[in-house]
Length: 444
Ligand SMILES: Cc1cc2nc3c(=O)[nH]c(=O)nc-3n(C[C@H](O)[C@H](O)[C@H](O)COP(=O)(O)OP(=O)(O)OC[C@H]3O[C@@H](n4cnc5c(N)ncnc54)[C@H](O)[C@@H]3O)c2cc1C
Image (cartoon, rainbow, N blue to C red; front, side):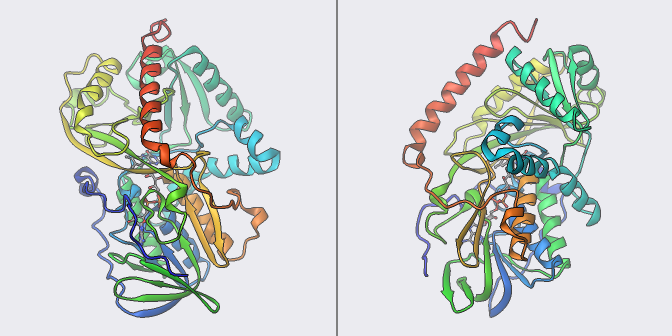
């Protein structure tokens, strides 16, 4: 089957990778473009967390692997993420159990909970330079209902012996330097990384394990052939028994229906100039990342150089982070009123690939052809896990042992209405969030 490229794609992301991340990552791998006709057991399309984790686990499992990346490793969402390594999905544990059943749901919860162990384990094992910090993640509750929800989450994990606890305002202030939230959840399993550094390190680890990486090698066509597939780029081709497509929000027309199964949304974050030395031990002194229970993005963390790093919502379909400097400054002032006005140094942005059900998807597209996509803006741990899962399946692990079930590829029904629908929804969320923030709960 031949599927020429020619549809709109966020693949050509004009925003450069962040200078803040470049400064503290290993240099790019500068892997050569594919310029020959070659063979491998498996071709992986896409050099982000998902594709590179798949390549690493496949190579470690004894398969010969070629990774084709259209730009450079980390050029997609992976080199542009905010950096939180999270042990949870969008939905709470009870919702997952209700949807996937007691056995399947528990398998998925356990897998996702193991994500930070996998990520930080790989960082240690391969000595990846990525500013890794594993002191936990914090969630402020912005309403009473959300405090109750966080309390249930803390009880769920405490019953399983995990280091997750609910803090009252005084305990939270001691840990973070802010009295803003009456309650915060502290989940010590998570942490943060420089995602570009982690992604390049994963690429280097995959190459060291025997995978061959070709950058600037966009997979332009896929042909089924006797015993497998041929993947063509502009200057070469790879014949392989199996192909894994891991292109998430940056999916193009390589295989019909993949891009149409996702809704790409723009996400943003800002980095400040370093704060004066005297504030370094006042703001988030243990360097947890703090987010809250609002509907839209709200992460804030202190980087190792003393700068503040803040994620924020913005225009969902175009690139305009500058508009949100003021909003970001107001959030910092709410949380840390003793700080002088923050000067922002850099904006970063990228596309996140949303699925309609907001779970990552593993698809079997045809014999020997897989897609691992739809990380829904939580791909550092989940993409690494999803890559490892698909690698295990390609190497022979039975389908019933997969925590992410194989599902059919279906078009995202919202896609034709995305702009008006998502635009209205985000405006509604902004209004609801700000009404709730102005309510009495935070100051009670
Ligand atoms: C602003 C922002 C903040 C985020 N913050 C977080 C966070 O704090 N924590 C978290 O867990 N997640 C976060 N995410 C989400 C996370 O970055 C993504 O979920 C993750 O990077 C997806 O990884 P991936 O490997 O599946 O896809 P990507 O990293 O997007 O990689 C896909 C790759 O495929 C390549 N490609 C596409 N088509 C082709 C082709 N035809 N041939 C060859 N290559 C191709 C692209 O160039 C790209 O490099 C954030 C994302 C953004 C944008």
